Length: 232
Image (cartoon, rainbow, N blue to C red; front, side, top):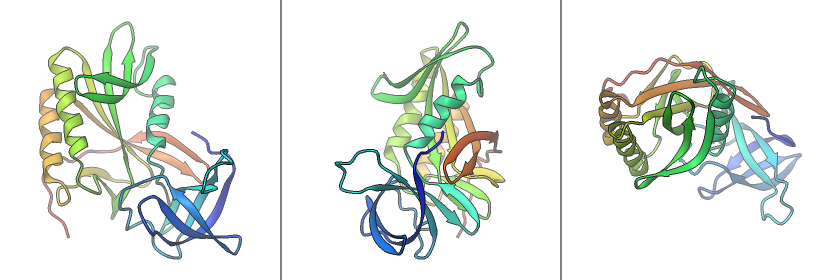
């Protein structure tokens, strides 16, 4: 996935979940933050960020904040892009060997899954989770409690019971990651449900991404550790 009309800026502060102040071309600019997560380890005053200019002239904010430089590592923090990148990757043959058709926002039971894939040999539901939290090259999800994420896992288990394939795809929005883990300290129930889903046959996948200021592409699988871990 490629962005159009980007600009580099410096992060100043974040008054609320939806907006941030940045310094762009020497002037303070209010921008939309395309990630309502906490992102405290990313949005630090003085950090270099990347903006995308909106094509909607009626918007209150002219730019979206899409990418941040964390200690020399570019991390895409656009929460809307993992689904698009996953669809592009799957349609190009990244996950399945045979030609597939992909539908987005497919309703099943009480949930709406990100992707539904059909081919001559499979019917599969895929839920996509973007990952921006990293510490010492370990990626973790979630960065805040997610009852919605637990519900999605339970629905994926039900899909398996009804004869579908089910996948949970963690799109790690950066490179240089040695493994992926549930964020046990933040939401223990999610980690437990993730392990239960794997035991039920849900395929748990984690992939890193090639990141540039104006680009994100799903690239390589990352090892997954589902053993409970406590950390400071």
